[in-house]
Amino acid sequence: PHNFADDPNSFHGPPRKSNNTGAILTAIAIVCGMMMPICGGVIFGIVMTVRQAQQDFEFVTDEATWEGSAARSAYQESSDFIASGRYSEAQEVLESGLELDPERAALHNGKAWLLATCPDDAVRDGEVAVEHATRACELTNWNNYAYVDTIAAAYAESGDFESAIEWQEEAIRLGGGLAGRDFQQRLRLFRAGKR
Image (tube, helix red, strand yellow):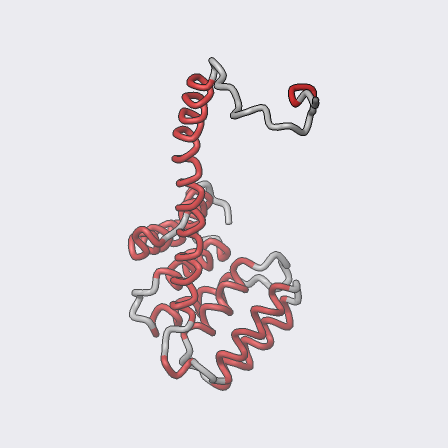
């Protein structure tokens, strides 16, 4: 006769209940309870980042005529150049786009942002950035918080931190909950006299 108790492949019945099962389940519940706010915060952060990007994109594509236009192509091409660190080429493309469509707020804003924040100091020009940011804001009745954020950065680049602070506070007010942490961070930099 075969002794099933000695056979490692034999069925030994249901697993025995450990005396520690209650404590283990309690510990798991506590850990899960602690992790939920953290995970929820991370998920909320991701959702808000995506919403911010969508909102910024809606501001950039602010008009129905934007779709399929040469100005949109110029904007997209300049974005590609910026992403690859080809800032002078991005600037040239934005200028060409503005020659085709001088009333396009997104192109004025794109050029202003590049001139105000470019990592290449040779491309930066605070005074010209203020001109283009002002035009972008005028074309949108000073209601586009992303463009008001740009004029704040342009003023900071030109050394006028008082105006930079004023416009950054306005961008935050206009953006409400959509104005991200980077808006607040720029405000702190401007208050410290930094760009």
